[in-house]
Image (cartoon, rainbow, N blue to C red; front, side):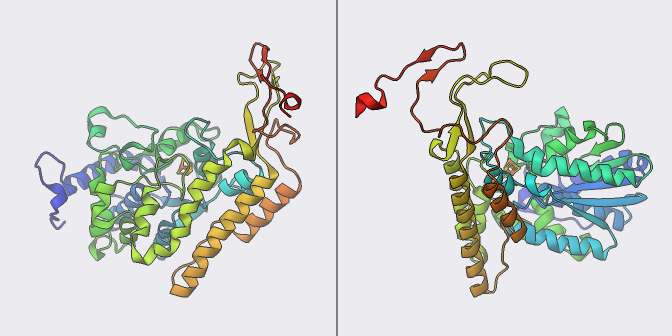
Length: 411
Ligand code: SF4
C-alpha cells in the first residue's frame, strides 16, 4: 500500500491510516471466516459508506477472503440529504457492476417518516419524547430484510456495521447508542446492539464493526482521498465528504442523519451543503426543521380532557397530555413540504441540477387518504379538545384546579 501522508495525521500518538486499515483487516480476518454469509448495513452516511467501500476493496484486492455470499442492505429512509442520496445511487451502480447483491430497504408506506407524521398525525419526535423514528424507519425495516434474507440462507449472517468509536474504542470496547457523539451516524449503534437480539434473528446474526477504532479524520481521509483512487476501488465517495465540508469536514463534524432531523440541535450538515454553490438551490430545505418544531405546538394538536384510563386499567401519568396533530395542521404541513420540494425542483430544472424527492406521488396520495379518512393514532378518537384550549388543571390523583376566571365571567 502506498504511504499516504496528510496533515490530519501529525502528532505521533495518533494511529496512522495504514495502521487503522490494518486493524480493520485483523478484525475481519478474526471473525469473518466463521461466517459464510456477510451483510453490510449501509445508510449512505459517512461511517457506513467508508466501511462498505473499504470492505469491498479489501476483498477485491485479496487482503481478506471473500465470504460465500455478500449482501449490501441500503437503508433508504426517504429522509436522506440529497447529495448523500445521489452518491448512494452511484455507489449502488458501482456495487452492482461488481456483481454485488444490493437490497434497498425502506419502511412500509404507513411507517415512513412523512406518512406517519402528516398522514397518521403522530407528532415529530423530539429529545424529550420517545424517539420512534430510528427504530421505525431504520431498524425495523432492516430487521425484516434480514429475516427474509436469512430464510434464503443456511447458517448465520455476519452483519457488518459502520459503528465507529474512535481511539477510545480500543481502550474501553464500548459501543454507544448515541448518534450525537463525535459526529456519529444515526442508527449504527442500534444496528450493532439491537438487531442481533431481534425476534427471529437471535442466534442467527452476529455483528462486526471493523472501523470501530477509526477516528473521524480517518473516515474523511478514506472517503475523500483514498477510496476515489483506482487502486482503492474508484468509489464515488468524494461527494459524501464534500457534502460534509470537504477538507473541513472533520472540524465541522456534522452528524449524519435525516434532512431536518428534529433531534439534532442544528442542521449542520444541511447548512454545510448549502455553502457549496452547486447545492444552494436546496436552500428551501431549511424550512423542514422549523415545520417539525411548529407541528409540536399546542395550536396544531389535540389533548386529553382529563384523567385517562389506560388499557391495563391504570391511570395515565400525565393527565391532559398533548397528543396527535390535527387534520388541518397535517394538511398545512403536507402543503408546506410539497412547496419546499417544488421550490427546490424548479431551481434544479433551471440550473440543470438533480431534482429531489421529499414526498413522492404514492406517499402524497397515501397521506391525503389517511387525512380524508380521519385517521388517528392508537388511543385517540379525534374528538378530544384542541391542545390550546384553556381548561381546569387535572392532577394524576384526580384533584382539579378550577380556572380562576371562566369564559362567561371573562366576557
Ligand atoms: S436522523 Fe433524526 S429523524 Fe432521522 S432517524 Fe435519526 S433521529 Fe430520527
